[in-house]
Length: 241
Image 1: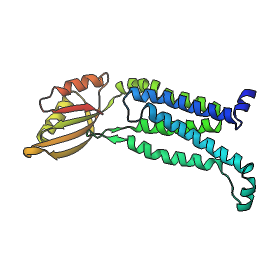
Image 2: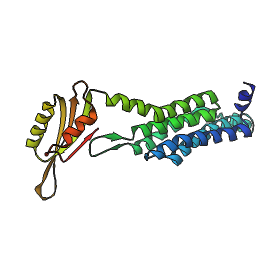
Image 3: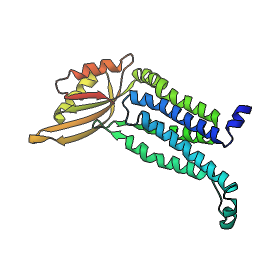
Image 4: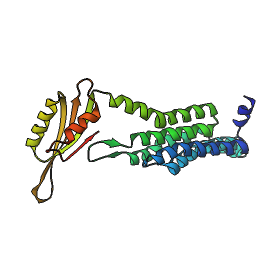
């Protein structure tokens, strides 16, 4: 505890340690996203975490300087230092990076939400590092790493056994949509909702894209359903979303 209290003091050694930890933890989280080919990877996460930590350190430096080096000037102008103001701007500003990582695919599937949330959370870790809240840094880092490295396997396991399934299907005509629904019902699958969009392609070719919200019978796996429906002659493309 004595060492931690010493490292929480504002001095050269604590600043070096904080920025080093920010680069290290941000880089570790970024390596995982880089490995999975996400929009924001190793360098992005590292710079976000380090920049947030530097912002927090800068706020503390301003407070310390106004209390010592700039004390006379502060009394003259009545300036008040708020070390949390710069950190608040980091939380607001990180939204621009997060927005740039979120995409809506042609299959109307939203991608990049985890990357955006990871950037925001990593910025918060950087702020904690800059403030010298080392216990919070460790817990925050472990929580983020758990979310992006371990929980996807748990999520995949749960979704694979879920009775709800969302399918994106491309067909040529509306008549084929009715045929596809009939085929789905033959498998004892319930269609409880659907979203249909018609598109006009080149040379007057029409394409119908549909998102089906299905309820599967017991003991029916997603992979088996997808395989059975993919062999339908009316289907041009099919994917689970």
